[in-house]
Image 1 (tube, rainbow, N blue to C red):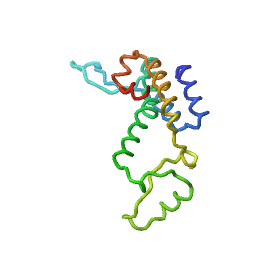
Image 2: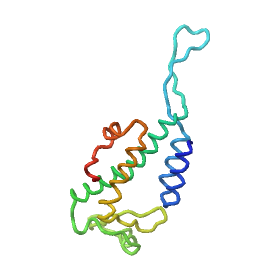
Image 3: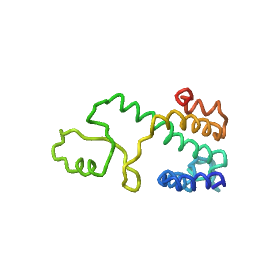
Image 4: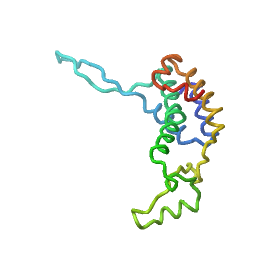
Length: 166
């Protein structure tokens, strides 16, 4: 792993986002699968085989930035869209230990359920405020677009929505 990736992984762990750090470390350690032709001795034609190669520095940064963009840019937008699509006062609620236990005891499959997010330590996930969305996400979008190894314009092709974060 590059020094930049190690720093990002450490920052994620410090921020209690260890599952994202673990995903990055594992993905980088597994490398990328590629198919290459090869020729065996005594065989007239080449065959194809799958090999695993380590990521180049650019590919590694693409993987890191892409993963962060998926978690912090794409997923929140999808979550907001889901909330708008399935808007129901009884559907999306803040997850608290008392309503997690109540939901897990529901016996009737037709009873309403509450959807929410629980962190890796089992504690309820703190929902981001409107101020976070308005102030932090634009900076995060800009930072990720600057870290993208193929430039800002290419980042926009993969993760459109700059105006959503301004």
